[in-house]
Image (cartoon, rainbow, N blue to C red; front, side):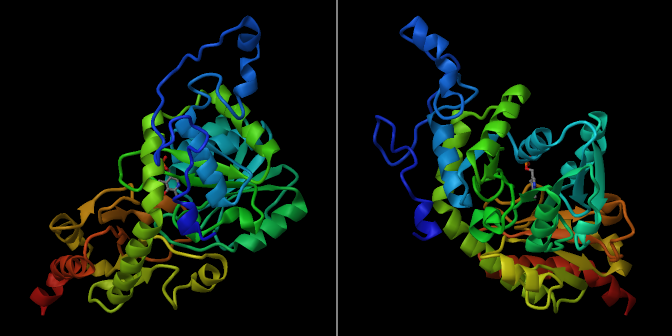
Length: 390
Ligand SMILES: *Cc1c(COP(=O)(O)O)cnc(C)c1O
């Protein structure tokens, strides 16, 4: 079955109220008719119902949907994408262990490495996204993270090569596959152990839900995650699950339209004055295009541009005066957004060679012609210094 069709499956098919949507069931306390049933309630911890925090009909339905879409045995929900990343770290790592995180990873995931993990006695090593990670493993390395493409810098990573090296060394692999969504990247098909999604982005899709998921290839990994999730006190609200299930139904059409517009605009931006470089792995000629073509089945609608450094004083005039594009960080919704980034500060390494200002562009569902016109006027404001100087 095509994944577009899978998205529309009846995820609440075990509920007594048989409708096409899954209703939110609110409840902390569950009731039991007998002492014996009460004493046995923990039997519902991994699969059924024992306490509102550990699962309710909408969360079980969304877990089923995410496991199916990611091609995993099980999936588990977390209160945010960042919580999913933390959950994997807390499940796989113990004091004394080392985790490898790419320089290009989502900022808070990198920073948490500096803070929380180190405070807990784990060591964190950042690596260049194109490094030969097999050479970096030590006896203490237990987990390597992959994020492709990287946040802001859009660097691709060689997922099969990293997985092969990690498997040889007995190191677990976690992939943050938020950019492409499960429609564009099925991490588990590449042999990774943990497939993380920030559902806050494309899957929920309307910029009004915060949630994450971790899909895994087997029951044992799921149970270990679920145990840690209990210790961390994680839970997700029924309404948020219902909104995310609603988003799933339109994920394929939204992403197809948004990614198509994004690719066309990215290609057009390559020849615009003021634009030094366009970073989008689905664009032929991009440094990551070969890896993207080989390993992905689709693209996200987020890419970055590097602008002419000599005009960077004009950046606010460009970004603040657009009619359609707004300035905001969390992408994946219906609206087009800009997010400027201080790459030197973000990366903290000499790896980032571009010197002009970088702007991440997230493309929404607006008409392509209107978005182009908005960008055209914005770039005219950016480059006006040239016109004046001339
Ligand atoms: C947004 C994002 C996250 C974090 O998701 P939240 O739900 O905002 O915590 C993690 N990884 C990537 C790649 C993201 O873009």
